[in-house]
Amino acid sequence: MNPIDYLRISVIDRCNFRCQYCMPQGAELAYGLRQDWLTRGEILALVEAVFMPLGFTRFRLTGGEPLLRPDLVDIVADIAALPQTADLALTTNAFLLEKLAQPLWDAGLRRLNISLDSLDPDTFATLIGRSGVGWHRVWAGIQAAHRVGFDPLKLNVVVIPGVNDHEVLDLAALTLDRRWHVRFIEFMPIGNGDLFADAGWVPSEVLRQRIGDRWGLTSGAVRGNGPADVFQIPGAQGTLGFISQMSECFCDRCNRMRLSADGWLRPCLLNETGQLNLRDMLRGGMALADIRDRVGALVTAKPEINFKMRESGTTGAYSRTMSQIGG
Ligand code: SAM
Ligand code: SF4
Image (cartoon, rainbow, N blue to C red; front, side, top):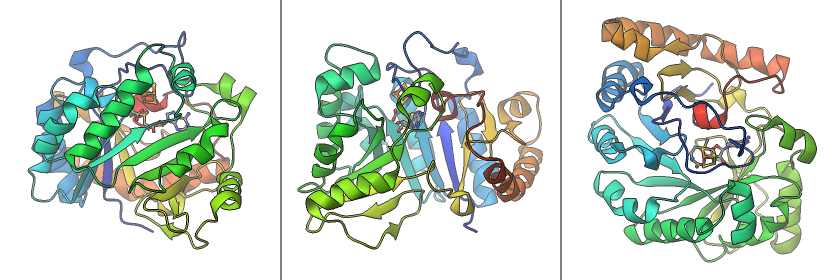
């Protein structure tokens, strides 16, 4: 069992995209109020006085779209400055990254994951539910991050049959002469059950076969810190990751907890058992040491919660989408 030392912190539930697989147009969620979000001070207090003493050293900021949060750079600076922070990363759609890449770097961020589901501006517009300059701005954001020094950059691709699966080779080819990590994520039935029912999902093994047929693929998967199995096209500068939560259960190597923008701490992406609202505890005046005890008990219970879900499958109804949970 891996140590549970990684916290994904969603800083906002809002998003400027309407990705078909996450928060499709017309099925928007009722956003929470700003005052429902954990404040910058509350996030820092939880990280420093609750999670770090429990052994958490690795953090990822996510959303919704985290670049929409006005005090994001300050939140990054707060966490990056803590001596116990071993790793701090951010997941973004990169639409606002061109201007923010440098301030984020200056605040101490060194790792970025960017969602890029297509290299074709029209397909991209369809996928994100926004017409216009979307793809070009995202690409400019990626270039800016590269220039500023984020290395390696990770690009996340959710593969949807009939929508972007024909681009898998083009996306994989980005790793040939760039030190980028392109990670293919199996589409999950969270967020848009209708699309999932219509389109289905592509097993990672099928993608590896296609890529392998074109260029060959290193045979031994290198297991990273996270859920991705990492491969490489021979001679390529970058790597390919495959996140296969549909075709392969990786609960037994799960090392993470998730904190939502409105303060819900959940031990498992797919399972709401045991979740705690840390914002209510803080605002209700509970001492940080008592919150730590409650969180510590949930961390201890987490492997059991994961495995329970594994036995009952992963296709049940979810009451929250990825944009609310933070992916
Ligand atoms: N807005 C940011 C972004 O898109 O990168 C961060 C939040 S987003 C919810 C985090 C990750 O969840 C993204 O990489 C996205 O592709 C993934 N995601 C969202 N819905 C998904 C689904 N139904 N299946 C698989 N991955 C999904
Ligand atoms: Fe927004 Fe990210 Fe969800 Fe797309 S995947 S709708 S960018 S939160």
